[in-house]
Image 1 (spheres, rainbow, N blue to C red):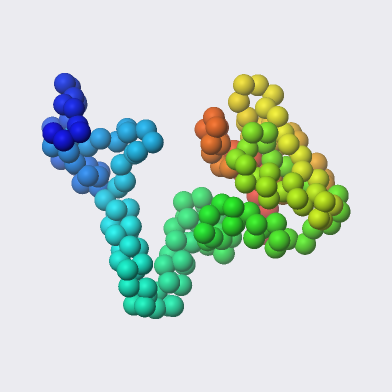
Image 2: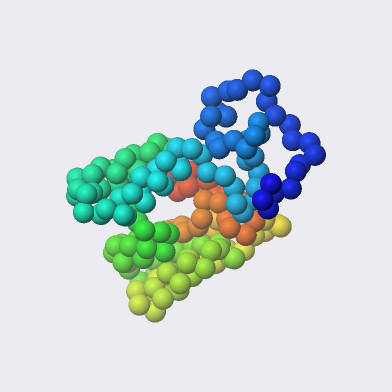
Length: 188
């Protein structure tokens, strides 16, 4: 097998199941734990193929189809995180989303942005310049133990806190800040 070594033992399921069909199979096994090169579900591969087809013939993608796709993504993301689709912004990436947020809010001197120490670098490149430009204070919250927790962030909030800007799942230690989001949720 070109570039692949045989694995002496790989457990397999004795009978097919619907989840198994959602993944590419190699022989009679479905490999799901490949670290940095994790496999993509069949539905994602099909979506990627469709997107590439659109890139090959962009003149065939109508404005309405592009808007419909964006709205579908917005709706699905909102469902995933328990939000209203109107609360979800679709951007080209996290940095673009942070920039839109930074320039889209009406800041007042003394407003505070809370983020975690060792957060993803886009947090700093977005909020640090706001200190000089808008008079915003960037508060870096250190963990009280080995890992950053939502409780660390919640404890750092003050009446001046205007925004908590953290990754839902941290890139360096995989800790989650979901409880912080629940704490900060504003009743509509």
